[in-house]
Length: 202
Image 1 (cartoon, helix red, strand yellow):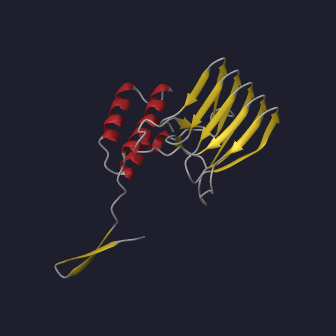
Image 2 (tube, helix red, strand yellow):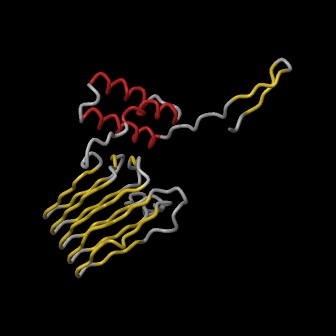
Image 3 (cartoon, rainbow, N blue to C red):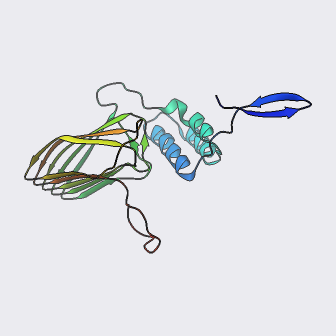
């Protein structure tokens, strides 16, 4: 453990290093955790208000972890860590501080899907996206450092592209499975914003 040494009255004192400061994005991700806990009945209105007050006044990441430590999703069955996204003649997207389960099932027909993991709340070392799309497109945006595999996608007059760069040793692994018929899969990193185009999309 790294410590900070100081002297007081001729004595050497050891102090723990300062806690990492919390950013606005950290607070938004923590708020999304407690809001979901309220929506599924784990927190009542009073507890929700208390947790949000605690989160938005937090200065360190440790304070945010303390506010959400007892709200980690509990696996009670095969569907406890799964979400299903359906689209038909429409456009669906998940972005911002959304909570990502271990498995995302996506079905689309004549539609477009966009799964943006850039600011998402991810608690798993590996995430599976199982997709069944026809005459549709799906774009997945992952932070730098994630590893991605798309070898288990069955293509029928479709295309798949992995545009991500080298993964970090302890980064999240995204495994894409399923099938694409007359459709396309794309996995990429967020696009860089340029000073001359401030509204450039991720």
